[in-house]
Amino acid sequence: MRVKLNHGLYDDRGNLCVRQNRNTKFYGNINPEQSTPYHQPASIEKALSTSPVKRGDIVLLDFGNDISHCKIIGSRPAIVLSGTEFNVTSPVITVIPMTKNFRMIDNPEHVFVDREDCEGLRESGMAMCEQMCSADRSQVIKKIGVITDDRLMDKINNAAKRQIGIYED
Image 1 (cartoon, rainbow, N blue to C red):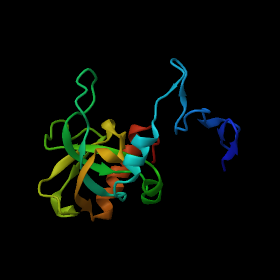
Image 2: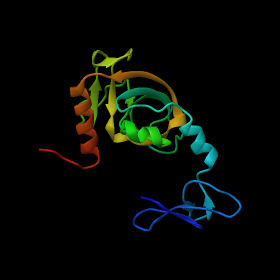
Image 3: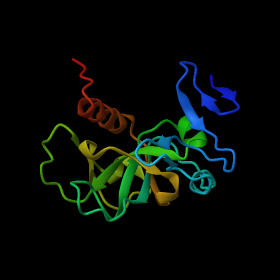
């Protein structure tokens, strides 16, 4: 539950979620280093205006071109991991990038995604759960497929759990 006061929006633990400025209304928190908003309403509204995706969808996503870090870049397929109900109301989604390169396929955080286990996917690939990340819904270029095999989705779930340290015996 969130509580709205004149100077901001608070969650049930009393943490400030959204601070409101007298001149400008915006969503997001204040950047403590610069004391300026870092999420503008226009970017949130743009993301929310896109069609929501479902858990298990495979989308073509623009990961950007930040080559200064060890993160995936460019436009590539990604598996939507966040829940369908969450995706409807949130401007961000959680995704797992895919690649056509099968190097290190034996890594426990890598899952082979057979196109036969998906609807609409033209080529098989590998899900890289160690690259799991949040993405703005406006980064989705288009939906290119959906995982139809429950066992494949279970493998991806287990690899994602392993990546974040939740082990099952």
